Length: 280
Image (cartoon, rainbow, N blue to C red; front, side, top):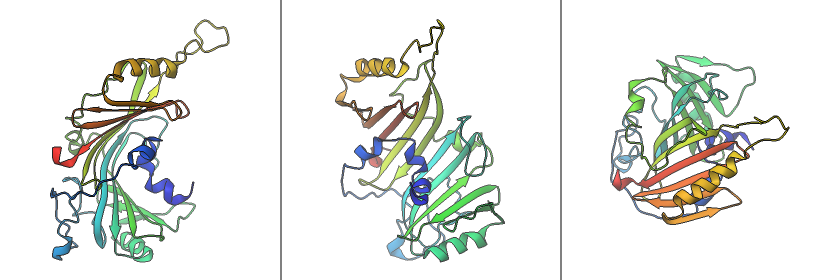
């Protein structure tokens, strides 16, 4: 997998095969929601360019250079002990922004390099990405040159920052956790597609009960057990389907489209909930 895919899809990869199904749906509606104003854009044709930014994204500190349109903005909270952030930290929270910029790759990277209070120089230089600090935030900016898309990660200084919790107080109680799985990441975001969507995600690791009777074999296939339980629990839901090969289970719950992926190869359970933004 090349560098572009790795950086652009870091938040999306946690959902594994889900997106291959979700992105196959198409719609061309437009949204009228407006959350913010971009200080670097003054022309009337760009008045809706920041519609899909979270209202607390620090746009005054971290502008979106030569912004044309926001593709998505999400906030992630990760407590997986096996994961480290782009800055080598555990237990981290960050905003992820994908946006279309009228800047060239060189202009884009130089802009953020000059914006940094201090640049973070790594042992192995990446010509497509720059990292640094802007006030209290650690920021990575990437542009891969093949199109007009820019990528930002803006890491908050504290995973307990009070601005984070408000995004998750109304996390839909559609999928209930159990003692067999442990939550390690959650996200909330706005997507500029299908007329605008709200998205919630989580991923869980599965606890392996191991070989309690010491016979050299795993006592329980936890993934098979969970698969059976989820089938029984959700098969009566509207538009239920399950793809045995991919492990993707999907159904409709009220205004939400639900995607639950049972990924034995990742040792994880992925949850994604989406609804049209007009229901936000």
